[in-house]
Image (cartoon, rainbow, N blue to C red; front, side, top):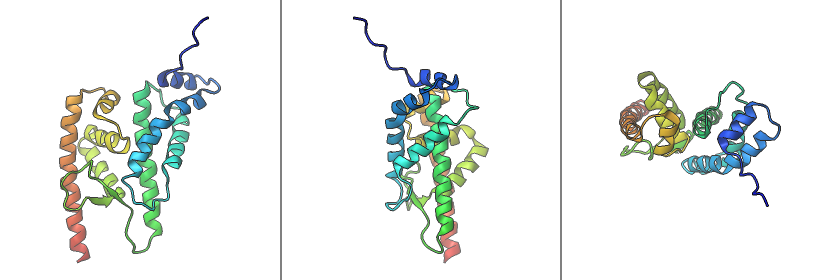
Length: 199
């Protein structure tokens, strides 16, 4: 009796989806859902307890935007999750900005940046502040900004980040340390300015 065909890979399904095969997008979702859910869950654990955007909703929103990326020439699984990290960052920042705009004088949406910036005097900083700092870092060093995005917003490991970016794990680790040091300086200075202006 012949063996059944193995399940298609993420890369194969991405190619089939681009070619317009009916059902490829649904098959892809079933294959990547748990991984996207893990990434989203890891992020949401760092968020405030009463966050109105749940991990499941975040995954579905990210996925719907991913399969709508008709202009993306998908390379492989790593490329897919790299784009997912970008979309997750954009969705979360937009959500934080909208949430903050609705509040009047209350505490802003906060996020623990312990994994990104070590040894800060206070480890809770706004997601919007991180996004602004990453935009500044991108102007200085686009590669370091991308590494932070993949590691923090995408929840990717050093090895996965290396695969997405096509550079060695040693380079990823070195650039990650440098980016964290830069963010430490920027965000510490931001908090100091905020403290002075509110005193």
